Length: 182
Image (cartoon, rainbow, N blue to C red; front, side, top):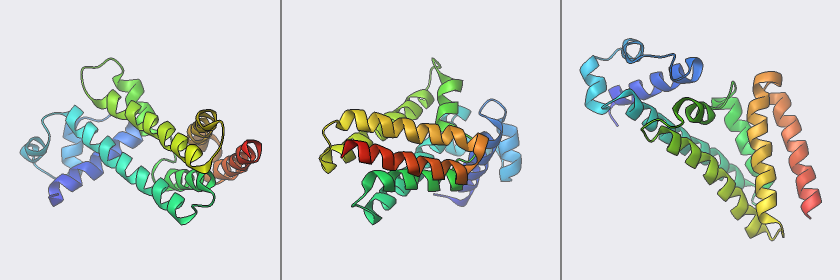
C-alpha cells in the first residue's frame, strides 16, 4: 500500500471515529492527510468506498486481537476472546462502535457499508459459536449469543464507565457464563 493511501486511511478512520461518518467531508480528510484531491480519487471513487475500506481494515485488526488472545489462552477460549475484545476496546474503540455507527448511518443506503458492518457482527456470533462447539458445550448457539451480547454491551459501556471498569465486569460475567455452561 502506498504511503499516501495509508495516510488517507489513517486520517479518515480517526476523523470518522471521532466525528461520525456524516460529520466529516472529503475536503477535511484531504487537508488533514496532506494529500492532493486527485490522490484521494486515484485510490477511492467515493467517500463510501473509502469508508468500506476503513471498515474492512478495522475488522482485520479486530480479528487479529481476538485470534491472538484465543491462541495464547486456548484452554479458556471464551475468556481469551473477551479479553482480546477488551484490549481492542482499549486500543481502538474506547468511545463507541464504528461498525454500529455504520449500520445506523447507512441502513437502506445503496452501498456495501451496512453489509460490511452487519457482516462483522454476524462473524462475531459465528466465531463464538464455533468456539463453543469446539469446546464441547451443549448449548453452543445460546452461549455464543450470550457472549456476543456481553461483548457488544461491554463496547457500549466503555462510553459510560471507561474501558478498565467495563473490562473488569465483562471478565467477571464471562466467567459466570462458563461456570453455568459447565
